[in-house]
Structure formats: C-alpha cells, structure tokens
Image (cartoon, rainbow, N blue to C red):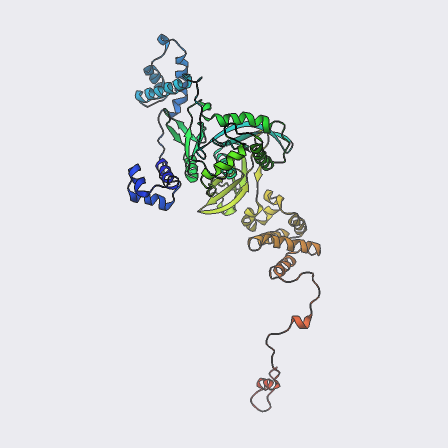
Length: 510
C-alpha cells in the first residue's frame, strides 16, 4: 500500500515518467504501468492473522513489569521467574518471547519518560499547498434542547492558516473520512502532506522512531486523495502546534456562547459559515492581509479535489430469524429473504447500508445514542416483512413493523380487520408496493377511503386507473368523441346470407 501511494504521488503530483518512477522505486516499468492503468487505490489481499501465545497473558505481564519497575534492583523478579510464573498460569510459549515483550515494553516506557529538548523549539514555515494539520477535541453543544458531548474535528492549512471545524457524535473511522472530505471541499483542494498525532483511527501501532503501522483504511483514504501522512512523535503535540492552538482559540471564538441547534447538520452548517467569517476577520500574522487573503493565494497550489472517498467501515453481520441485525445496541430490519443469512454492513457517519451478493439490500438512517440509560431502539421498514405476512397474514394484526404504516394504510387496516378475511386482503394491498409506485398505491387507498368504499377490489380499480393515466373524478366524457373508431366498419347486409343454410328451406343460423 505504501509503495503504491509513492507511485501515485510521483505520477500525479511530481509528473514523473514511468521510466523515472521505475528507476527510483526499483520496480519494472510493466509493474508501474499496471498499477497506474488499473487506477488501484486499495489493493485487495488477505492478511492472515498470526496470534501469539503470549497475547492472553500480555496485560498481566505488562502489569508485572510495571510493578517490578517500582522496586529496587535487588528486589525485582527476573524475567526467567516471570516466565515460570506464566507457565503455571497456562502459558506454553518460550522464554525468548517473554524477553522480547519486556524489551519492547521498556523501550516504550523510556520514550514516554524522555524529556530531553522539550523546552526548545524551532519555528516552522510551510510553502503554499505543502501541508495541513488535523486534530480532535471534545466539546459540548445544545442539540434539540439537550446538552450533548461532541467530538470536534479540526483541520487547518499550514500556510494560509485557513481552518474548519466539524462536529460528530463519535470519533471513528467513518467520521474521520467525512471530516477530511468536508475540509478539502471547503479549502478547494488537497495539500501534499497531512500532519497527525498517533490517533487510533490512523495508527494501529507505534514503532521505533518514526516507524508506524498505519491503518489500512486510513492509508486507502490518503491514497485516494493523494497526500502523504506524517505522524508526530508520541506526546509531542507541539509538532502540530497550529491546529493545537486552533483547538484552544475555537473554544473562545465559536464554541462558547454559541446558539442552540435543532440537529447536528444545523450545527455543522453554522460552524462552516462561522469559520469562513473568521478567515475574513482574522489577520494572518506573518503574511500581509487576512487569512482569507492568504487562502485565496494558496488555492492555486492545492491539488484539485477528486471525487469523495467512499469512507465506510465494513462489518459482517448475520440476520436474525426476525429479519434484524444489531449495531451499537440498536437493531435494524433487513429484507426477509435474507433472514438467517450473512450480510455486509457498511457504516457511514449518518447512515447504514446493508449489502449482500454484490447488491445493496437496504439503507437506514444511523441512530447514535450516547447515553446507556436509554433503551435500545429497533428501526423497522415494514416493506421488509411483506414476504413473511404473505405467508402468515395473521401476523399483520400485531406485527411491530406495521405500527409505522402511513396514516392512510393504518385507517384502511382498521376497516379491513373488522371483517372475515380482511387480514389477507390487507396484505394483498400492502404487497402492491412491490410492483407499483408506493405513492400511487397510497393515492388509490386515500381515494377509496374518501369515497367510502375501502375494499380491495375498489383499491385495485383505482390503482389501475391511476397507472393507466385515466382521469378519476374528472368531468363527464363526450361519448361520441371518446368512442371514435380509427377504422369504421362498412355496412353490408349481404353478409347475413352466409349465416343461412345452403339447402332450400334451411333455417337461420340462430
């Protein structure tokens, strides 16, 4: 993935030839041409999991090392003693694995405790379009009359210092991808580098020095937008001091005393407009003019914005016998034909998409509940259960998904269930939405109720007239004109002779 990112940057940003890219990377020209022609963003390959025998005991061993580090040298247990103690707990690995874990733990601890040079800094300068900085913060806002804890995404151009804030309820991969898209959209392009701390949504593991095991989906996003990610040293927030300062300034300039909002979308629209207003009001500091003036000049150095990265997170789910899947304590309905079968759940910031066998099955608005005191919610789509009630019409009477029918269908159901066999007829009417436009079916039901004839036959009659484009409730037709034939028949009474018998005295054919 990293080499593929380098190839794309050399070709799309540095405009190097395929021969030069092959010379610099050591790859053959055919390999470079193949990757560029395929426009591959995220290579597909399976990475086998290789669990270690020490994984179940890693937390306990780390606790022992932390405890022993606080003791004097003579009182500490040796690694051999710790290995023997782990063996008594069921560990079957070697001593070498325990020793390697201890070396890594001590190296990480030493980096955390290192303080050399923290009080001395070097001023930084960035070229137009060279870099942006990203960070998260935690703040509060009043949404729908309730004080809500939010995760604020801060993205800031390092040269012009143009910035954007965007609020989310969670700090997850799909929120991170969405924040980058809106930042690049507002900035009007993509810088060459992105500077981050070692957040979990970007870095799976911090190695020695600048070595990072970058999350595969995050790397796919950077490959899509063609910029190079750069990560700060652990606990070294000053390496992205511009956005760190922006977090502090935003609380005073925008977040404190801001109005209440009906929902998150209204808050984000207000934040975007407020940020752009501050660009025009705030002096840049090192360049002449305001932030907005510097941003207008920097736009020419930004890479043109590509299409939005499809930033979903995918999980495998199994549909329950009641046609539901679970996600974040809530449940969502799936078409009944996929009950008891595996499906793929694609998670976006504002919606959930269920896919299987290469097709999109359904889509739901995502429900995010921050409070665990609230009961879990179940989101139904009554259309998903039509195949079930066609076989079991009695389930229509108390079926939970059918409590959310449109008002006209609920009123029709009240009439239908009062007579024998009404549940079957109601199911047949509901099933019409599988073959016809749902709005046309609702219109036919409303007309049947208005005319006082809420029957299946009348609804079908009205629906067919609507589908065929015939006027319902219009003025009377001019019958002679309406029945005008395209081909008029000719009057010929001699045709009646053919109906008579051929012999004399025969009778009429009737």
